[in-house]
Length: 333
Image (tube, rainbow, N blue to C red; front, top):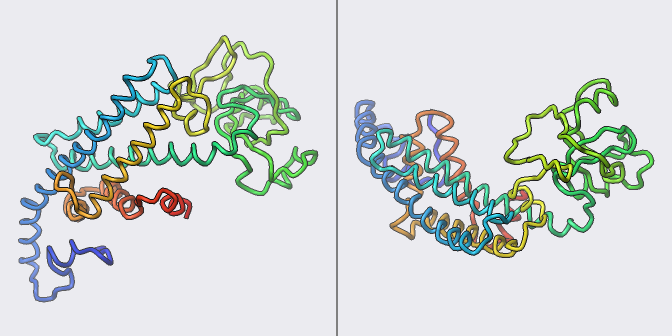
């Protein structure tokens, strides 16, 4: 089976038309073998070098930001995490690797994941910041349900519920529950057994039905395996400490270097946008091209997972825009 992109110059002009009936099977096989040994290698080198160049561009503002920040500050933790992501992306690009094609696709995967991460950081913060004044509880705080009595840790929140909750049990006494903030709660197992007769992994609770839990000497027993790097227990304060990444997305305090961090993330977003637009438009010889991606998609992807990585990056390239508002509308459908 062959999938042909509607506007794919690569499929039609460079390597011939798949519907060309004058091409024999032998000629087709010969063409594929030729492509595999020449253009595939060129595209691999272009991708590895291009991702390395993008990494170098991103590492400069991150290094500058890291030098300006207090190493114990919350903001510095997120910068260090981003630096690790970029360095991992650079280390992948060993052009002498024995698994050269795997190296190219793995590089694309790391570029894609970093792009998604930066987009998520900026999108969530921009969306949540205007709603923060209506939010009573912070990430990691241990709260207690006023009606059912179970305790739980705040893992996330929505300014308004994501579905109609007007007929939910426990909300009959809440005025306009569809207009109230709702919290994603990881509940204590033993409390849930007492309240519901069995453990629960997740609860979605209206702000009006929550209050701070007064005494929390020990961490809760949670049905979900909580990542200790993302949710660290603070015995002195009796709550969990959310990761710097989560705090950034939910517009929580990140310390004295918060302003610098916000500027750095925005700068990374700007650099990535410029790089993706240059790739899409073919304007920069230091980066790879759309043809290189299509070559890897058609001849270099050895499995579905590899193909999905390349396809998802191609989608991001076509969605990218220097107009931030337009890109936001595209992301929101």
